[in-house]
Amino acid sequence: MERYDLLYRLYDEFDTDTLREYQDFVDVFPPVDSRVALDHWQEASDELEERKDEIRQGFATGGTFAEVAARANREQAFTAQDLYSKYGRAVNALVLDVDETLRSAGSTDNEIPRDTLHVLTEFHERGVPIVICTGQTLENVKGFAIQGLGNELVHSGNMSIVYEAGTGVFTPGHGSQTKQLLYDDLDDEIRDVFDEIRSRVLPDAPDDLRRGIHLQGNEFNITLKPNFDIGSSKAETVIDEGLVYLLDLLADALTSADTDADTDQARQWTRAYYADADSEIREVLESEGEVSETPVDEIPEAVRALFERIDVAYYHADAAEIGSLELNKVAGVEAALDVLGVDDPFVAVMGDSKSDLRVMQWAAEHDAGIGAAPDHASRDVLTHVMDTDELVFDQGKSAEMLRTVYVLNLLAKLG
Image 1: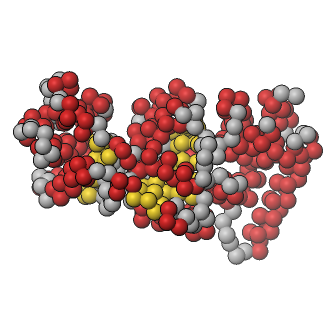
Image 2 (image 1 turned 135 degrees about the vertical axis):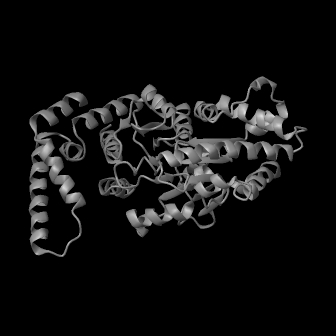
Image 3 (image 1 turned 90 degrees about the horizontal axis):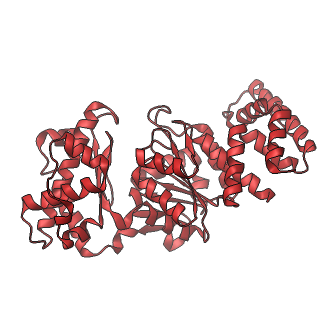
C-alpha cells in the first residue's frame, strides 16, 4: 500500500490526538519527589504503550507508525512524507539558530521551551549531530546549551557551536579541532579594518548614542546592541542610528586602507554600496536622511573589492553589526560538519535572519538540505522558505518543526 494511504489510515482509524497527549505528558513530565505524581506518570506511560501496541499490531511496520503518530499530527506527518518523496533521504544534521528561532522573546520568555529541548535530545539519541549556529558569543551559547541540554550532550562529541555568525567553531571532544578560530585565517588588510573600527566604535560615538548602546563581547565581529528591550521603539531608534554610525566608521577605515579617498567620498561610497546590497539598510538610511546619491557603478573597483569581503548586517530593533563575509555562518557550518564527520550533508536549517538565509541558500544550491523559519522571520528568509518547501512555523513553536523533521527521519528508515 502506498505510504500516503497508510498515513491516511493511521490518522483516520486511530485516536492519534490522545496518543500524542500521552506522549507529550510522559516526555516532559518534570522531575518530582512525589509518589502520587510518579504513579500518575506510570499510569500515563502504561496507557501510552497500550495505544502504541494497537498501532503496532495494525501495520506491517507498526513500530515506526506508532512513533510517527506519537510525535506528529496529521499535517506534520504528511509534510514529512512530502519531504521524503521530494528528497528521498533523511536529515543527517540539524543547523539551528537560537534567538527568535529556538527561543523567542515574544512568546517563550526568551527561554528554549522544554518540548523543544526534549526533541533535540531525541535527535541526539538517534545519532543526529546538532549544530547551534548563532550570532551570540561562545560563552553565552555554552551557558544556555549546558543548562538546557545538559553537559553530557554538549560534550558528547556530536554537537558543535558556530558562534558570532561564523567567526569561530566550538566542537567539544575533538582534541585540537575542539575550538577553531576562523578569523585567524583572514589577511592583514581585513583584520586592520576591524581593529580600527573596534578601537573607535565606543570612544568616538556621539554621547546620546553611546548612552543607548553597548558592544557585544565578541571575539571578532563588531556588534552594537541596544541598552533597551529588544524590539522596543527606543531600541529601534538607537540601532538605526548605530547602523549609520557603523557605516561611517567603515568608510573612515577605508581612508586608512590606501584607497585614495577622502572621508566624505568614502562615506558616500559605503552608504551607496550597502544600501544597494540590502533593502533594509536602504530603508534605515532613508528614514535617517542619510542616503547617498552616488551611483553604485561609480565606486572604484578596489573599494568595491573590499566591500565584497565585509558584511554589514541590520537586525531591526536588535543589533547592527560588521562582520567578514568570509566568516559567515556558511563557513562556520561547513567547518563544524567537517569536524563532526558529516561528509554528505543533508541538513535541516532553522533560522530567521539574513545570516541564516545564507546557510539555507547554501543547502539549496548544493542539494544539502532544507530550510525552515518562524513566521516572523525577515522577508527575504520567508520568501526563500516559501519558494522551496514552505516550512514555516509559528513563533515560539520550534518543536513542531523539529517533530516534522524527526518524522521525516522515521519515514526514511522505511525506504
